[in-house]
Image 1 (tube, rainbow, N blue to C red):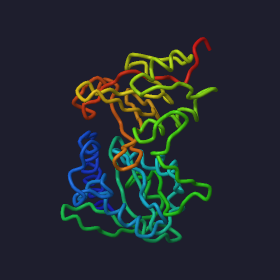
Image 2 (image 1 turned 90 degrees about the vertical axis):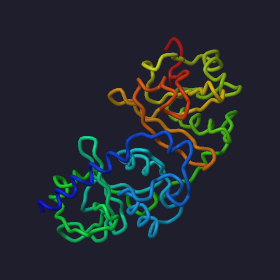
Image 3 (image 1 turned 60 degrees about the vertical axis):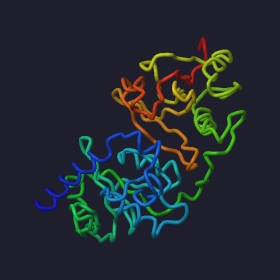
Image 4 (image 1 turned 180 degrees about the horizontal axis):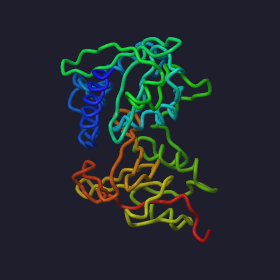
Length: 291
């Protein structure tokens, strides 16, 4: 048991280092050969679990694209997958996750017994999986079990293309999906302005929405507007959470028709070297003026 805990500690350290935010991974994946689904790095400890999950899961398989594995449970659930938070509720083929003090552990369930879980994980430098059995009670202390993603779709789950147009927002630019998410939390009338994305802040303000111009004023549920001064392009994102000075936001990657979850420190929003040349421009809050 102690040997396993030591290996888990090494795995957590390795996963944490690899999953530090890197804008290069979003802007230009190197080649198909060294990425999995054009996003997750081959050779990373968690890629084995993703591949094994896809062997037994129904279509579309792994469809959450998140730079930090600690966000996998929430994103996978939003993307239509069954998620459980007790080790005894795992099934064969489920991705199991542990998280503690910024470090992430990823494995794949192989069998659930009446007392524990048989699972595989890659923890050695050779990239080969090893199989372990652990009692349910021990999972909480050994890997700090957080939950598992079952290879089962939520019965009512619908697959919505992030490239579809929404109201007057254009899907091919990646602006429609954030607008759709904004409408889920904003008061009526919701997204009701028009014009190109670069003018959204001004147009939303005209339509009675609260618009903030400082990174420190960002709030959960807001539309975040990035601008690249070199390419003069605009990128829209939806703010999912604001946690201890860290922004958890989602944006559409048009070349691959996928939604990506990313994290940035608020004090990084004005640094053009962090997010592919894009910097904070404005944020449209889900609040009406004078209310």
